[in-house]
Amino acid sequence: GAVVSQHPSWVICKSGTSVKIECRSLDFQATTMFWYRQFPKQSLMLMATSNEGSKATYEQGVEKDKFLINHASLTLSTLTVTSAHPEDSSFYICSASPVGRGNGYTFGSGTRLTVV
Amino acid sequence: GQQLNQSPQSMFIQEGEDVSMNCTSSSIFNTWLWYKQDPGEGPVLLIALYKAGELTSNGRLTAQFGITRKDSFLNISASIPSDVGIYFCAGLLAGGTSYGKLTFGQGTILTVHP
Image (tube, rainbow over the protein chains, first blue to last red):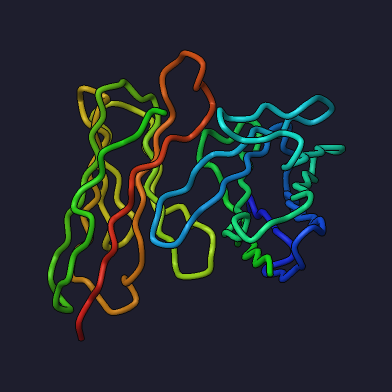
Protein backbone atom coordinates (compact mmCIF):
# COMPACT_ATOMS: atom_id res chain seq x y z
CA GLY A 1 0.00 0.00 0.00
CA ALA A 2 0.83 3.73 0.10
CA VAL A 3 1.71 4.19 -3.56
CA VAL A 4 2.31 7.63 -5.02
CA SER A 5 2.21 7.98 -8.79
CA GLN A 6 3.85 10.91 -10.55
CA HIS A 7 3.36 11.85 -14.19
CA PRO A 8 5.09 12.47 -16.51
CA SER A 9 8.38 10.82 -15.63
CA TRP A 10 10.21 13.18 -17.94
CA VAL A 11 9.34 16.18 -20.09
CA ILE A 12 11.19 18.49 -22.43
CA CYS A 13 9.68 21.88 -23.10
CA LYS A 14 10.60 25.11 -24.81
CA SER A 15 11.50 28.25 -22.90
CA GLY A 16 8.47 30.31 -22.09
CA THR A 17 5.98 27.46 -22.07
CA SER A 18 4.26 25.95 -19.05
CA VAL A 19 4.47 22.38 -17.82
CA LYS A 20 2.09 20.54 -15.51
CA ILE A 21 3.21 17.67 -13.28
CA GLU A 22 0.69 15.42 -11.55
CA CYS A 23 1.04 13.62 -8.25
CA ARG A 24 -1.56 11.01 -7.30
CA SER A 25 -1.99 8.90 -4.20
CA LEU A 26 -3.26 5.63 -5.65
CA ASP A 27 -4.49 3.69 -2.63
CA PHE A 28 -4.93 6.29 0.07
CA GLN A 29 -6.17 9.78 0.67
CA ALA A 30 -3.77 12.59 1.34
CA THR A 31 -4.89 15.95 2.65
CA THR A 32 -1.31 17.12 2.38
CA MET A 33 1.25 16.53 -0.33
CA PHE A 34 4.72 17.97 -0.66
CA TRP A 35 6.70 19.11 -3.69
CA TYR A 36 10.47 18.90 -3.79
CA ARG A 37 13.15 19.91 -6.22
CA GLN A 38 16.45 18.08 -6.57
CA PHE A 39 19.56 19.08 -8.49
CA PRO A 40 22.11 16.42 -9.56
CA LYS A 41 23.95 14.83 -6.65
CA GLN A 42 22.19 17.07 -4.16
CA SER A 43 19.58 16.53 -1.52
CA LEU A 44 15.87 17.15 -1.85
CA MET A 45 14.75 20.73 -1.30
CA LEU A 46 11.19 21.30 -0.18
CA MET A 47 9.43 23.79 -2.43
CA ALA A 48 5.90 23.85 -1.09
CA THR A 49 3.23 22.08 0.90
CA SER A 50 0.04 21.34 -1.01
CA ASN A 51 -3.14 21.39 1.07
CA GLU A 52 -6.37 19.88 -0.23
CA GLY A 53 -9.02 22.52 -0.64
CA SER A 54 -6.84 25.44 0.35
CA LYS A 55 -3.84 27.42 -0.82
CA ALA A 56 -0.41 25.88 -0.89
CA THR A 57 2.26 27.16 1.44
CA TYR A 58 5.59 27.92 -0.14
CA GLU A 59 9.07 27.76 1.30
CA GLN A 60 11.14 30.90 1.47
CA GLY A 61 12.60 31.84 -1.88
CA VAL A 62 10.13 29.81 -3.96
CA GLU A 63 8.04 31.95 -6.31
CA LYS A 64 4.39 31.01 -5.89
CA ASP A 65 3.42 32.66 -9.19
CA LYS A 66 5.97 30.58 -11.05
CA PHE A 67 5.25 27.26 -9.38
CA LEU A 68 1.47 26.97 -9.25
CA ILE A 69 0.10 24.24 -7.05
CA ASN A 70 -3.44 22.91 -7.10
CA HIS A 71 -4.72 20.23 -4.72
CA ALA A 72 -8.30 19.82 -5.86
CA SER A 73 -8.98 16.37 -4.45
CA LEU A 74 -7.72 14.06 -1.71
CA THR A 75 -5.75 12.03 -4.25
CA LEU A 76 -4.36 14.58 -6.69
CA SER A 77 -1.99 17.51 -6.50
CA THR A 78 -0.54 19.29 -9.53
CA LEU A 79 2.52 21.48 -9.93
CA THR A 80 2.61 23.81 -12.92
CA VAL A 81 5.89 25.42 -13.85
CA THR A 82 4.85 28.58 -15.63
CA SER A 83 6.94 30.38 -18.25
CA ALA A 84 9.69 27.83 -17.83
CA HIS A 85 13.33 28.81 -18.30
CA PRO A 86 16.44 26.63 -18.59
CA GLU A 87 17.28 27.29 -14.94
CA ASP A 88 14.01 25.55 -14.00
CA SER A 89 15.41 22.33 -15.40
CA SER A 90 15.55 19.93 -12.49
CA PHE A 91 14.14 16.75 -10.96
CA TYR A 92 10.78 17.40 -9.29
CA ILE A 93 9.45 14.91 -6.75
CA CYS A 94 6.22 14.81 -4.78
CA SER A 95 5.41 12.98 -1.58
CA ALA A 96 2.37 12.20 0.52
CA SER A 97 1.52 10.37 3.70
CA PRO A 98 -1.58 8.33 4.42
CA VAL A 99 -3.60 9.79 7.23
CA GLY A 100 -3.25 7.70 10.37
CA ARG A 101 -0.35 5.58 9.15
CA GLY A 102 2.44 7.41 10.83
CA ASN A 103 4.90 9.68 9.20
CA GLY A 104 6.56 7.37 6.69
CA TYR A 105 6.17 9.70 3.74
CA THR A 106 5.95 7.98 0.38
CA PHE A 107 7.55 9.56 -2.66
CA GLY A 108 6.59 9.58 -6.30
CA SER A 109 9.07 8.43 -8.92
CA GLY A 110 9.95 11.98 -9.89
CA THR A 111 9.73 14.09 -13.05
CA ARG A 112 12.81 15.13 -14.98
CA LEU A 113 12.11 18.56 -16.49
CA THR A 114 14.39 19.86 -19.21
CA VAL A 115 13.76 23.34 -20.56
CA VAL A 116 15.43 24.11 -23.87
CA GLY B 1 16.77 26.27 6.61
CA GLN B 2 17.14 23.44 9.08
CA GLN B 3 19.39 20.68 7.81
CA LEU B 4 20.63 17.37 9.00
CA ASN B 5 24.34 16.65 8.92
CA GLN B 6 24.79 13.34 7.18
CA SER B 7 28.09 11.51 6.90
CA PRO B 8 29.98 10.24 5.15
CA GLN B 9 29.23 12.02 1.89
CA SER B 10 30.39 9.00 -0.11
CA MET B 11 31.65 5.49 0.43
CA PHE B 12 33.49 3.08 -1.84
CA ILE B 13 33.42 -0.46 -0.49
CA GLN B 14 33.94 -4.04 -1.56
CA GLU B 15 31.04 -6.42 -1.88
CA GLY B 16 30.48 -8.21 1.41
CA GLU B 17 31.63 -5.35 3.61
CA ASP B 18 29.44 -3.69 6.19
CA VAL B 19 28.45 -0.03 5.86
CA SER B 20 27.55 2.56 8.46
CA MET B 21 26.25 6.08 7.98
CA ASN B 22 24.73 8.58 10.36
CA CYS B 23 22.86 11.82 10.72
CA THR B 24 23.07 14.41 13.45
CA SER B 25 21.28 17.63 14.22
CA SER B 26 21.19 20.35 16.82
CA SER B 27 17.39 20.04 16.90
CA ILE B 28 15.14 17.38 18.35
CA PHE B 29 13.23 15.12 15.98
CA ASN B 30 10.25 12.91 16.74
CA THR B 31 10.61 10.73 13.65
CA TRP B 32 13.64 9.54 11.70
CA LEU B 33 13.38 8.02 8.24
CA TRP B 34 15.99 6.42 6.02
CA TYR B 35 15.55 6.40 2.25
CA LYS B 36 17.43 4.99 -0.73
CA GLN B 37 17.34 6.74 -4.09
CA ASP B 38 18.34 5.15 -7.37
CA PRO B 39 19.28 7.36 -10.36
CA GLY B 40 16.23 8.95 -11.95
CA GLU B 41 13.87 7.65 -9.29
CA GLY B 42 12.20 8.99 -6.20
CA PRO B 43 13.43 8.00 -2.73
CA VAL B 44 12.19 4.69 -1.39
CA LEU B 45 11.58 4.31 2.33
CA LEU B 46 13.86 1.74 3.96
CA ILE B 47 13.24 2.15 7.68
CA ALA B 48 11.07 4.42 9.82
CA LEU B 49 11.85 5.14 13.47
CA TYR B 50 9.33 6.71 15.82
CA LYS B 51 10.71 6.40 19.36
CA ALA B 52 13.95 7.47 20.99
CA GLY B 53 16.23 4.47 21.40
CA GLU B 54 14.28 2.40 18.87
CA LEU B 55 16.37 -0.11 16.96
CA THR B 56 14.74 -1.52 13.82
CA SER B 57 15.90 -3.98 11.19
CA ASN B 58 14.79 -4.57 7.63
CA GLY B 59 16.71 -7.51 6.20
CA ARG B 60 20.38 -6.53 6.08
CA LEU B 61 19.57 -2.99 7.18
CA THR B 62 19.49 -1.81 10.77
CA ALA B 63 18.74 1.71 11.96
CA GLN B 64 18.51 3.34 15.37
CA PHE B 65 16.82 6.44 16.71
CA GLY B 66 19.28 8.13 19.05
CA ILE B 67 18.42 8.52 22.72
CA THR B 68 18.89 12.28 22.54
CA ARG B 69 16.48 12.38 19.54
CA LYS B 70 19.12 14.39 17.68
CA ASP B 71 20.76 11.60 15.72
CA SER B 72 20.26 8.33 13.89
CA PHE B 73 22.42 5.77 12.15
CA LEU B 74 21.91 3.22 9.39
CA ASN B 75 23.96 0.05 9.03
CA ILE B 76 24.03 -2.22 6.00
CA SER B 77 25.55 -5.63 6.53
CA ALA B 78 27.19 -7.82 3.89
CA SER B 79 26.77 -5.29 1.08
CA ILE B 80 25.87 -6.44 -2.42
CA PRO B 81 26.13 -4.58 -5.76
CA SER B 82 22.45 -3.62 -5.78
CA ASP B 83 23.00 -1.61 -2.59
CA VAL B 84 24.54 1.07 -4.81
CA GLY B 85 22.66 4.35 -4.64
CA ILE B 86 22.21 7.47 -2.57
CA TYR B 87 21.00 7.07 0.99
CA PHE B 88 19.21 9.92 2.72
CA CYS B 89 18.21 10.39 6.29
CA ALA B 90 15.16 12.50 6.92
CA GLY B 91 13.52 13.71 10.07
CA LEU B 92 10.34 15.29 11.31
CA LEU B 93 10.94 18.10 13.78
CA ALA B 94 9.21 17.85 17.13
CA GLY B 95 7.41 21.16 16.71
CA GLY B 96 7.63 24.74 15.58
CA THR B 97 6.92 26.15 12.14
CA SER B 98 8.51 23.18 10.36
CA TYR B 99 6.10 20.70 11.92
CA GLY B 100 5.01 18.02 9.47
CA LYS B 101 7.75 18.79 6.94
CA LEU B 102 10.62 16.42 6.32
CA THR B 103 14.15 17.72 6.76
CA PHE B 104 16.73 15.86 4.67
CA GLY B 105 20.38 15.07 5.13
CA GLN B 106 22.81 15.76 2.31
CA GLY B 107 22.93 12.11 1.31
CA THR B 108 25.56 9.35 1.27
CA ILE B 109 26.60 8.04 -2.15
CA LEU B 110 27.37 4.35 -1.84
CA THR B 111 29.46 2.49 -4.42
CA VAL B 112 29.94 -1.25 -4.08
CA HIS B 113 32.71 -2.96 -6.02
CA PRO B 114 32.03 -6.60 -6.94
